[in-house]
Image (cartoon, rainbow, N blue to C red; front, side, top):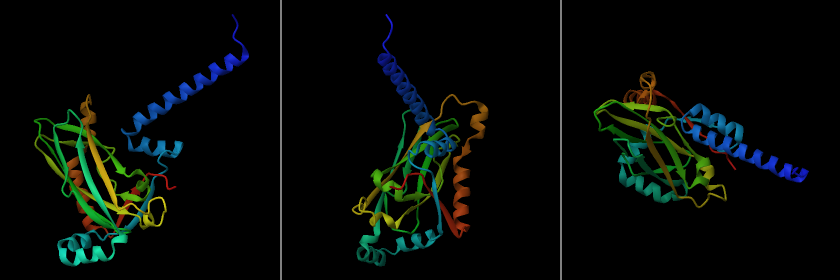
Length: 239
């Protein structure tokens, strides 16, 4: 029995949709494994948008000093509550990764338009070198377009030797446009969440090529202490 033209058209459309769906699923699966593919994915599909970069004066030392002066800082925070957001930090390790991983601070009060510095801590509790990769998430999602951070330990293979630990600096920045946008004007709390996943079945060369999390973090800390400017990134499309 010969298919009618309209039946062939429907079958053709189904095959096209199935093919597009499979390709999309493969791309989504790959982006978490490569920062380059992630940026290409954003640029080609428009999902997340292209990476936006800004450079701001390095005021993180001033932030650290002011946070120690609780009295004056608390008064200033109350007086300028409309210019502040609370940023909460979350840390997770996927099943099968014997690492400790947590933020040194559960939250910080971030002044809009100014960088804030904090730290995450990780330790390999096993007796072998382990390679892991982190992904992050910002919630509420609508605020993510105004949330910038330094390129640190995300989307790259990171390794820790047996018993080795790392203190990872993180600088974040919340664009002051967040409270000028009617869609995000009410946002007062933002959560930044990281999850580390173990990378298995790696070759010796892939393990050797993985970034040393401790050494890389120490280098980043040294760079931040000497830099007059801080480069930050955001890969979410601005609406």
